Length: 361
Image (cartoon, rainbow, N blue to C red; front, side):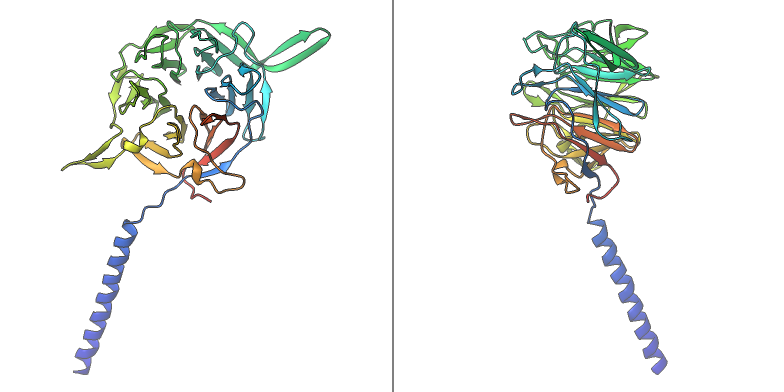
């Protein structure tokens, strides 16, 4: 009897342990940890602004143009560079007088050079001209007896086939892709490619809605177009362009789905005037709208979106992220960067660094 009691006690204890482990596992599965650490980066050296552009060449970012009605200039043509290994923003050659000032332009990088085109000149004129920035060349300017040499040289290249404002751009295999936006009369869904110094429409038409203020990023060697607005409503479709297959592929829409086969809610991703960037072959869309601070990660592998920590959740050293739209973003190495933009009527000059897989400090 004593042995039977001892065995029964041991069995009951083992059962309690197993039950406890089971309860612990259920509790753990119900708790989701949100990742993404935002910390304050170097403040932009130029004036605060919105609707600027940014591009990256050899792990150095370049950002410029844009507007700030509260400043004397109003609309800008200046540019600054950011090298993460050194920190801080340094002024480089401004877009030339012939290019003028602009905001709402589009930019991309191809063959080690940056391209900036389209936008509005601040006087109600929509633009189609495109300018190439070469960081390996310098520009020497003489005014009176003063000679100044600055980094970078701008050269005008072939203009876009149409005027474009609020478009998106990127590149695949050094071929630039630009499209959507406002053409001066209507929102458009036409996309163009820049190859060998000339523009042409993509071989296949974009199947999605017209839009302006969309977001775009390149991941897994495909060009993704996300969100934007049309007819005063957020666009909810997502498409990816595969240049090697010459086709657009529809991805999961930005909405909530619950049925017998699938359950997901991507409605929070839908927005316009947001920032997009790529880190380690995953796309990120953040801020935008009028008050959004949220950030989502896109995985091309399974066509899914994952909520990351919001920029407003920044509590790291000097980090107090602010909701904004019409900002700029870019990825360098294992980090994303987000900055500039407008909150209400206040233009911003701050930048934040984003580590996608770290817990918020």
